[in-house]
Amino acid sequence: MEKIAVFPGSFDPFTKGHESIVRRLLPLFDKIIVAIGVNSHKQYFFPLEKRKQWIEQTFKGDVRVSVDNFTGLTIDYCHKMNAKYIIRGLRTTTDLEFEKAIAQMNKSMADDIETLFILPTPELSAINSTIIRDIVRNGGDASRFVPEGINLKL
Image (cartoon, rainbow, N blue to C red; front, side, top):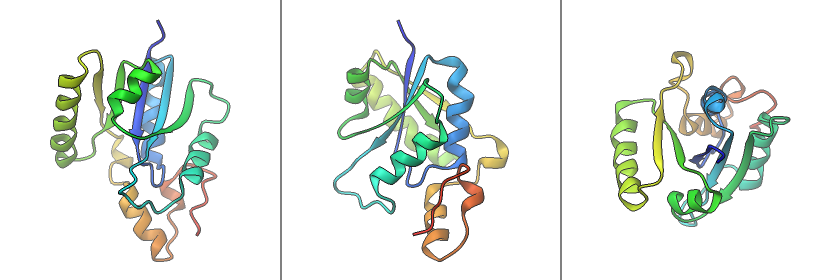
C-alpha cells in the first residue's frame, strides 16, 4: 500500500517554509498531496489557480508531489485520496496548541489517520503567509520568502 500524506493549507501564498517541509518529508512517503483548502467564508489574497500554479511550478518534475484543492473536512479529503497521514508545520507554541486541538479532533473522528507535526528549519521559522501578504500589500519585495520563480507582484 502506498504511503500517502496530505499537506493541507490555504498557501496564500506558498512559502519557502512550506516548500522545505514537503522536501524534507518526501523520503518518508510515496506521495505528498499539497491540498489547498477552500473555505467559502474566507477571502483569499491570491487566486486559487495562481496558488496551485505556484506550487506545481515549485515541484515540477517530481511525480511524488501533486497539488489539489478541496472543500470540507481534511479527514474526508484524506479518505477520498487514500491518505493515512496529515502533515502540519509548527512554527510557534501558539501553532502547537491550535494544531494539537485540531489533530485530536481529527483523530477522534478518523482513527485511521495520523497527524504528523514538523518544525521548520531555524532560518525559515519566521516566514509566514500573513506577513508575506502584508509585505506585498504595501509594495514591498517578498521574493526572498517564496520559492524561486514565484512572482507575487499584483
